[in-house]
Image (cartoon, rainbow, N blue to C red):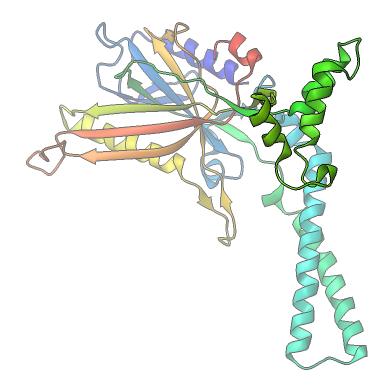
Length: 364
């Protein structure tokens, strides 16, 4: 689980006196790229750690299997379908069969078009065409259902990580979606009648009559009789509005950094950091370029003095939604060898799991 790997990172950090560039933890096979070079010093105790989780179908895993340190599963307290349910044979088989049926229909249609294009329109040819199409469709359906690319994927934590100083104040926004709904006068009347012993009399009867007058053609008359009654009596029907809860927004987070390299080593570190974020935020192509394979997912953690900072909010797994990089500062400048004297980077992450009260109890 994610918490286990955070604990693993914590222990690895405690085993070190300080954080240094390209920090390597031999005991845990963890390699962390850091900026600035004196991160962890008395003036730079606050920092953010970005752990990286690659997709199980990614070529990165196949080519760098020695960097895989474990599988990351979705937190069961999130509002989404659990990892176990997503990977269950029932759900997997259902989606595979659905894809297979679609492939079968498409293949049958394709066989029919081919037959028509070569002029085979006789009854015998149509029967043969349909049979061939059905057979081809069945074969295609089986192939789709059993395709490795359509099997449940995994998230694998890798040893590569990035630690950056905390430059901006930690900020978090929690947002819910509500809408206003008109329950209607008749619904309000039902509620009133349910708690009343008098039945449909007095005010309730008047309201029912006025509500009925809103129906076009009621009583054989035209026009908005309800409006006419309202104008005459100086009253309006209560629409019984309610604020209805609908959903929870995914949280998003922005991190902004101004890199001012002091030497060639720091310039190369900055270049590596940018390259790592760029690489893992993008998808990759399947072998025949038919599918996109999802990008990597990041786990973000606030640290203070080499320990998780529990005074700030925690993060659910995030995807890197956008990244802006500006080289050379507002008034562009570079060193004599062409290296920019300043690099500005902005990262926008979006969480992949919805928060609930159970999540809040855990510190999110």
